[in-house]
Amino acid sequence: MSNNNTQTFERIKLINILGLDEKAKICNRCKKNTDKDSEYLQTEGYQAPIPIKPNNQDNITKIGTHTYALRNELKQLELDYQEIISQISISHEVSLSEKIKKMSGILYKNQHQLNQKPIYNPISFKEMLAAADKDLIGFC
Image (cartoon, rainbow, N blue to C red):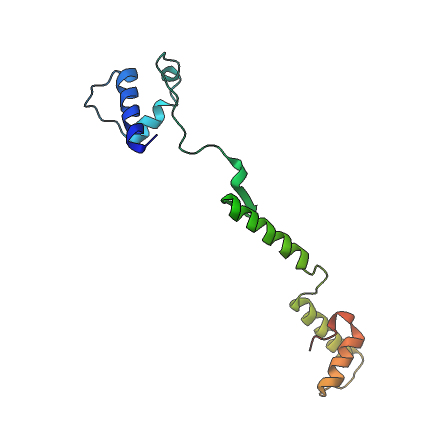
């Protein structure tokens, strides 16, 4: 039903059911509220409003903390993308901040507790970190 036909239908519904004058005007809020009035809903000539969109929950997709309404082809594309991302994620990978904390702990232990001198040679430094913690292999 086109928008113009819907407006005509609503106008006829309001004139007949509510006994309004043909030239009466009613705001959209009042039109919507008439469909919530229990007395109005029980009248013999009441016709339920036609929904603009069907209640189709099939196209609702939750991504992270957000919910989106996607067309079917976009929904499938997003689901495929999320599946690929989950497969390539490395769950055991140590974050950069964790690596820096580990490196700081090793340097503190070596220099302050074991009284070792600082290592200025980059190759020796990498080897020292790798020997101290396997998560730091290839860090520097």
